[in-house]
Image (tube, rainbow, N blue to C red):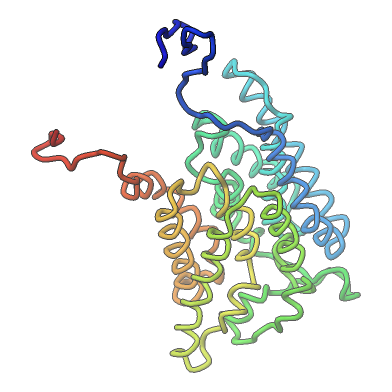
Length: 337
């Protein structure tokens, strides 16, 4: 039996044996924000390689522009707010990479700079920095550019691997929605189609996503739940559309579904923390993707589906909060006890 509790939290008996009494957490590991962020950067390397392979110098220029601008913007905001400078933790690099991968290869450099400044400044730093942002910064930057430059951000060209000069071309989603022309699964898998730089090659994105799962940084519930929800609702439309709507596999492979599922839905800051909340998040987001694609005026809905659900995360966390052990239901504003 313990006979003494010292002020420093050390509980000891008369023989001197003792243990440390402290609050949680009691388990620690070697993970850190820089380590996690740099691992995500590594996971994005296959998608960046695919983008450079298919769109050559255009991809390199946009990637460098968005990454450098994101780092500089974060540095300036943190200096202005008199906060510790954390540009080396990798989070701004991820924002820059993801924003670049969501842009058409022909997007102008000044537009990429503006989008990166908005993504870091408004999407992240104004909320208080990493861990406090409500929305995914890269997606918010992409949404800003969508509203600011609607023509330039929907102007695409064929990949360089097709052996033709730069020719404007519609994305697979636009071809299907406006012309009823479906793109083959094979082309969507390897990425030999027009579209945003990092969204064309599904295999490259999948490799990166599985690497994050192998490292233990993502829960498969989120990406597979999102893609599964898209597939289920896409199947319902496909079966009842008499050829008007694309098949569920097309929905998964085309556009930003894969990139969103593996690198944005899984964002630790802007996704729910409870298992039930995560299911709600991915199911509703998947439905929104299919609804926007099939019923809306835009061919793509991934960006809006995730941003809308980001806004709902605080409510989802509140509604799905697990009951504390021993907690009594409230009655007339007071807990029973």
